[in-house]
Amino acid sequence: MYKKFYRAFSQAPSGSPSSMLHMACHSHHYWPDVTLEAVQQYWHDAALLADDKWGPIFQEKIPAWQKAVACTLKLPDAGQIAIAPNTHELVYRLISAFDLDKPLRILTTDGEFYSFARQLQRLEELPNVEVIRIPKAPFATLAERFEHELHSKNYQLAYASLVFFDSGVVFPELLRIAEQKPDATQFVIDGYHGFFARPIDLSRIADKVFFTAGSYKYLGAGEGLCFMSIPTQCDLRPVNTGWFAEMAELENRSGDVGYGNNWLRFAGATMDYSCLYKGLAIFNLFRREGITVEKIHRYILGAQRRFLHTMDNTHHPLLNRERLIHHDLEQGHGHFFTFDCGTAETSEKLQKELRTRAVLCDRRQQLLRLGFAIYHDENETYQQVFADY
Image 1 (tube, rainbow, N blue to C red):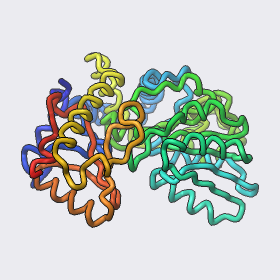
Image 2 (image 1 turned 90 degrees about the horizontal axis):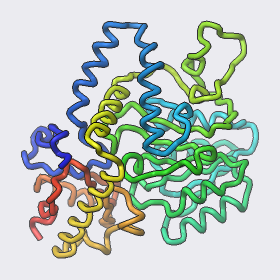
Image 3 (image 1 turned 90 degrees about the vertical axis):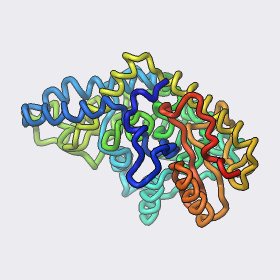
């Protein structure tokens, strides 16, 4: 049904079979065809307008992107959505607002993405920074354990993924936990593996959390455009700040470092906006075609059910229920499955074996990930994955 928008899906990567089944879509979605024209339009606008391009970008393109994101996430104020080339830049800008001469206590999990996990390790080298990591497993008790710890101490920052990048498991009750957080705790939700995949309603916690995600994965607009929603009453003053933060007052700059009461509080500096054009083109395409996140999620659930049915009838030694990391496959899972192969060598061997069957997937050490996308055929049974068993 949706495959018609993805010309690239019928074109296999160089050196691979023409019947490639792309199941690394949780890492990189194929771009809809409309993105080609969008990139060309960006080049045309930049070449024609030169420095004058900033007017349309800041007055038209960015507000349109913010409005589309706010609508997707049920955020009431699109003007509170900051943008940057990556989420790490935005999160570190938030961290820079804390006084690192004072104690900084951070609560998180042991399942966060590499960039944040690495940044925390570096921060822990400072004598006044303390990080508490709640084990994500067992998932059935994660919400209880995380929430208990959140309220047991004075945490300046809490950070957790809505969908864990290594397993696809949804953090149970995370939005409710955020809604009931201590007032003094800044709360960040990493929503990258949930945005434009699962329906997300942030309306009840828009003034309580920072929510980060981007266009690289499920939206399919490529790398280079990420965002962070900001609570409306936020008065933090990031040390990491760029000239875009003064865009509204650039011609009347005073000697003080001021911050606006909108997304510019967390703005950085110059970036490439071709991804902005691509993202808007996709939003417009999906709006014209009536494609919603709810419809996408239902489509993927159907694909996952067909995959599980084929898997259960195959008895694969590694791709089976016992190896599948999950909590609630219907209500509490993202758009990819992760199988624990035991060792990195085993997962690498299986990845290469699947490649010979024209199945493209990825892995994280011993974990093999298989993703699902709307450009998979609606009758796909995924027998190709299990062909030799």
